[in-house]
Amino acid sequence: MSDFAPRHLLVTGGAGFIGSNFVRRVLELDPSLQITNLDLLTYAGNLESLADVSGNPRDRFVHGDIGDFELARRLVGAADALVHFAAESHVDRSILGPRAFVETNVNGTFALLEATRAELAERPREFRFVHVSTDEVYGDLGPVEPAFTEETSLRPNSPYSASKAGSDLLVRAYARTFGVPGIITRCSNNYGPYQFPEKLIPLMITRALADRPLPVYGDGRNVRDWLHVLDHAEAIWTVLRRGEPGEVYNIGGECEVPNLEIVRRVLGLLGKPESLIQFVTDRPGHDRRYAMNIGKIRRDLGWSPRHTLEQGLRETVAWYQEHRVWWERVLNEAYRTANVMYLGGLRKTAAPR
Image (tube, rainbow, N blue to C red):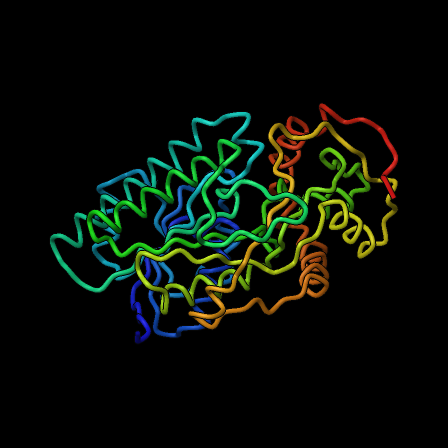
């Protein structure tokens, strides 16, 4: 199949962590591409994350809600592809307030699918709808179980992952029933520049820089597959151009590491003591292990991750050290959230060896 070559791309959630890195990267990769960036600018969306491309005439920002059908229909009408990042994405927030996750992740995706279906019915043309999802829809794995494949059953364990599984299934249904050219990607844990400091790696970096306690859930041995955000951005671009409508593609870093080891590496890179580690009551329903089999995207589309964890983590720590102005402006919200989610259950124990 020849490559699909979009000329005008509608990106939802392009002011968020993954979305902003994607926008920046594809503007570099394709010097003729036009982007319309639709974002509601909730707490984790920040136009400062795109300050370096704000003057680019090929990047247009629209402040709006993905659940607004009329707005979505108008924007889809000017595009020949849609990459859907916009989502509520933090598991702990979904436990504290599940409603917003259903409204954004399920109902918002439904509105975008309806807008796309209506537009393509009126003006049929080659189009792609890339829906960016998560490995969390698969549930979790035991210590020696094989990694998730695209055929693994969906078994979400949190309100967040359940809402993403619901949106995945809507995309699948619209592809099968209505012919919407949807493609689903499922990624492992991302890290890198511009990540909101409620997620594990930036939370640990920013707290360590302030010599504050580093809250670690349970015993810290929950395992995640770590993927650098720029590798993820390039994988999404590859799927958009070469992926087959109706298919699912796993995207991972092939890098399984326990959370506690990540925290220790961050402390080592910053020259901070491990005595800053403090353990907190475990998250309800905390998935024990994720691992992604990326054989399909490597074999069919020719993509593989380029960053090693050693390189990527070193670069990420350096980025947060060099961009204090960016992350200090969001610290009040991040630490207020952290205090609710983590520190209320703080218990002082020594880090296990």
